View 1 (cartoon, rainbow, N blue to C red):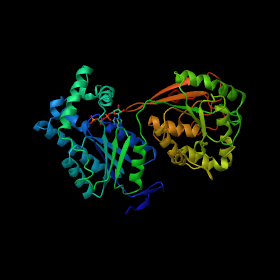
View 2: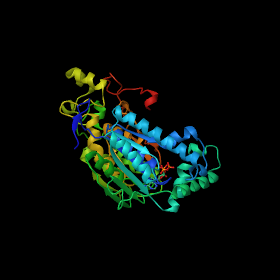
View 3: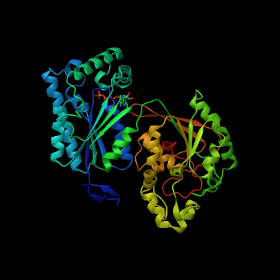
View 4: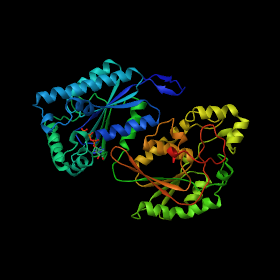
Length: 444
Ligand SMILES: Nc1ncnc2c1ncn2[C@@H]1O[C@H](COP(=O)(O)OP(=O)(O)OP(=O)(O)O)[C@@H](O)[C@H]1O
């Protein structure tokens, strides 16, 4: 049974520790899945870390050719086993220091290897969740190889076509010994998720608890079709002009100009005229900002996209908050991510309520989100891997469209400025300025 305890921030956490053991032939997206899961969990403040056996193997064999991976190559076999042992030893050490979800990123392609890992984990009371990625689409595999493998450190400085061919041969060597998780045979007792053809078909077996089911649900929603996510704050509002936070104000005249210009800015950024789905919050300033977008764009309002609730401080300026609630003002500057406004929310709270938004974003294709400063910071932090100490201080200028394009191991960013002046709503630590400027270069 899972025990529920409180961590040092008073947040209720399960006492469960899980090792996600990746399974699959090379170029099946294991590292992609591992780094997505790690980011998602870290964003939710769950201690998660990936241990990539290939990185350990590179210490002894930095640029091996396909022969190194042949089953009948004893030197290769010995070095690969040593790399797996070193990765597992480091992971166990990390679990002992408070790690919650460790991800073992390796092929783990035989039953013997999986039982070896399982025995070590079971001895230390750590649950095992196998995640197998199966895919026989030769075109997709070759695309994956060209996308990420030819630029891997294994092939640094080598001809990309030769590298691709060698990697294909490496896969052939693994294919000779590869055993898929044996659902109907002697692996039927394992806890696993099998993702077939990038989630077209999914098999789930013996999921035990809430944390496992969250990881499984997240992984089931991933896809790799090309797409982008556009983020924009609402146009400048009358509250922005006054330097007041919260509220449900309408747009200033310059905010209205931004709303009118947004369709052109979006069209320029999207390029090929494909339709987007637009998500706004339920507050008037985001709905007004999105109202001139083409009628062919589906629009949806999400309560979860409403601005961080500033509780008793709603409608105040920063100077007003400092005058009335000086201790709160100082406490927020001290730890902006965790500080919760009296009767309101913290950034941490906002992240929790944004989880369904992230889940839906992962399932979706092209989406434009028109939302608020704090909410945008949280969504941006998820895609761009920004840490919690920094993301609440990030500068997100008004009247700017941000385009994020997820790639295999990261996210590309482009910014499109409307060139319509607006006040700055960015505030530095300790400041009560109504409109602070200049903003430090690092935040621009
Ligand atoms: N479920 C999936 N099935 C097939 N390909 C996927 C899947 N998920 C992601 N990909 C694609 O896989 C590529 C990344 O491959 P990745 O490096 O993750 O493979 P790997 O299985 O970790 O290989 P290796 O065993 O060599 O480390 C990306 O191009 C990504 O789009």
